[in-house]
Image (cartoon, rainbow, N blue to C red; front, side, top):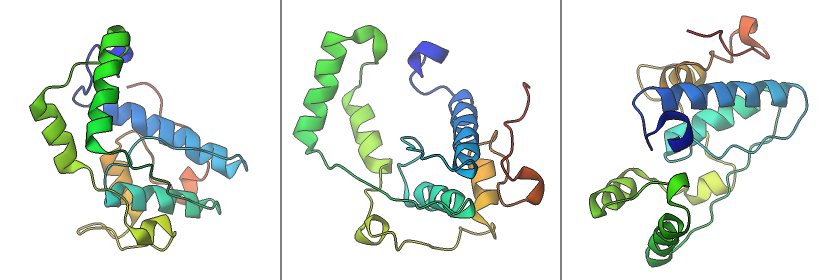
Length: 154
């Protein structure tokens, strides 16, 4: 995000960009290509929505998680800041604590491909939940959005 927006977590543009990337992923899956998604994976709801997106195209979805001990995670972040400060951003203790508070590590059912919950209320479909979470991602379960192009510039 830093090279694009000059900020590590800009309000709004990050979600729009991620939605566009997911839309391209959806099109690629419809075309029979393999896709690796490395965004939107911080919470169970996001992962459930993205698994639903994959299932909608007939693709297999697999969640992989590489646990890194907290001491090692912080050492890597600190090293990245020292070695390549223009490609990253500094993190305070509050930043680290905030990230740890919101991240939900995948549980065994997700890693085994058996996590298929209902979307949270008031949503009846994961596609509707995801279209709100990532504003530029069309609701993929609508016939008019099968293999949808990202929306035009706004």
